[in-house]
Structures are given as structure tokens and as C-alpha cells.
Image (cartoon, rainbow, N blue to C red; front, side, top):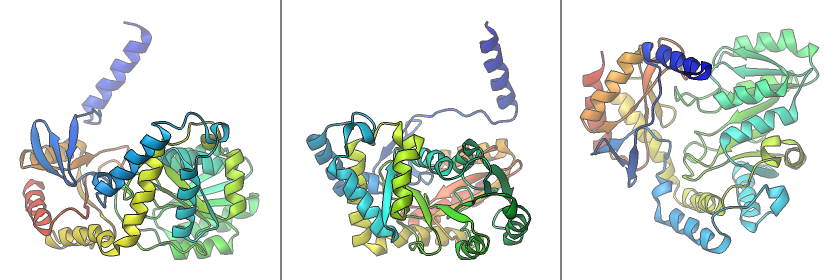
Length: 374
């Protein structure tokens, strides 16, 4: 056994001892809200396809047509092979949706955040990030070389104190938050943070991965840097930033995860365009995931859901895993989320609701969850 083998084996043993080892389990989606796991057809309450658009026939037909016209891949970086027309159409639609001058599409949400932040700030600058901001926002912040300080989750007083004490010593300042926090489902106080950003000449960037398509639009006057993904409610794949034209133009030249990576496959771009048509044409459908989440929280006497995400905190990782397995035995696919994704002692069931879930589905899940809680 080499030293590398020994290192990996030791680390895996340490993860096993804490119930923190991750493993892949074969799962096949079957329509909007069902999946096959361990040979059983189960109701899935764990993906981010909030509007079930990855399974929508209109979206699938658009993707197929794009493959027939443009092929399966883009060939290279968009700056090398050129911009096929679907990209320009999607960026124009995203900018119109978000009320901004322009937009830029990246290969994924993670690639977007690790490219945007270092392209705008660097050594000598300050980044203030919510303590629960997504891992890719933190990755982009660390890559930038700027001074990075976390403020307590949604704590306006703490953020104010940090701005007052640190902003003056730095050239530029960026504030990084999620609009919807992916493990807790709560919303950021965007208007209040925007006011602080204006007061201290800081640049506010929101990650709207879990809000686009299912929550009311952000106000572009409040948020100059609106980032998000195409892979959740839009049912496709990719990331984007909507902003003023000079900012977007700068990113086309300086965001390394845009310049030096292959463009999205045409099918993904076409699928996102079709998904936007569906969302804009059926606003009632777009409101359904939050309504289902609120039904669930009422049934279990939990805080009223603000988004399609509802956490049921269990505590220790092994207990959360056991609860997830018991739900699977009853026909519900609900994933256990463990540290370091969430803080120690807060392992949980992360439950997500989609427009395809019926009220009866939600009621059955609530009864099953009540039965597995410690």
C-alpha cells in the first residue's frame, strides 16, 4: 500500500467513524415526482427541479431540436468557437427577466461564482459573506485574494459593525449572500442589506439559485449583481449573472471560468429558453412549490415555509441517516444532509417540494416524517 493509499484509507475510516462518508446510490427518475431507488418506485422529495421542467415535454422537445440543429456539444470555449445564436437569445431573455442590461451564461452555478467574484475584487479589497452562503460563493471569495470575513447568518447588526470597522481600510467591498439559503430554506433580508451596501459603497451580489422561477423577481435597483442557475427550477444546466452591460462585458474578458472552459451544450441552452417560456406563461404553476412547502410546515407545526425548501433538523449525522432510511422504507426519498454541508449538531432531512407534488403526497409525507422523528 502506497502512502497515498494509506492516506485515503485513513481519511475514509475517520469519515466512517463520524457517519460522514458520502456514497453514490443509483437512482433513476421516473416522471415528475417519482424515482427508482433500490428496486422500489418512491416519491421523491429531495431534488431541486421545483417546477418539474426537466421532465416537461416542451422542454425536452426544445433540447432534442437543438441537438439535431447544433449537435451535442459546443466544441470549445465560446470565445474560441463563436457564439451560436441560442446563447445570445438566452442571455437576452435572462436580462429581460431580471430587469438588467445584460447577462452572461456560465457552464454551471459553481463556475459562475468562482469566476465572477475574482474578476471583480482582489488583493486590497474586502468581501463580507453570510456565514451560510453557498460553498461556491465562499470558493470564489477565497480565490479572489481579497480579505474575507463572514458575518452571522442574516444578522444585520453584525454586518453593520463589520462595514463600519473594516470598509474604510479597503479599496472595494463586496457583500455575498444567497437569496434563498439552500439548507434552511429561509430568505435573506435583501432590501436591508442593499441599503447597507449603498451606505458603505459596497457591491451586493445575490445567489438566486433557489429563487428564480418560484419566487417574485428581485429588484435590480437593489441588487447590482444577480447570479443564479439554470439547473433547478429551469430544469436545465448552467449558471448566469445578470448585471449592467459594462460589468458583463468585463466578465467576458476576465472571468477565468468563462474564458477557459467549454461552452454549454446547445441542448442545455435551448431547454432553459423553453423553460422560461413555460414559467412566464403559467405563473400559477410557478407558485405551487412554495404552497406545498407551506402545507407541510402547517401539518408539522414548523415555521412557515418561505421557499420550496423545508429543513427538519435531527441533530447527529447517524440519526439523520437512520431517519432517511426509514422514510425510504415507507416509499419516500428524502436525503439526510450532514456536516460539513451544515453545522455540527444540525444534521437534517432536507425536504424540497415541487409543483408536481399533490396535496395528498404532502400529507402522506408529513405523517411519515412525524413517525420517524426522534
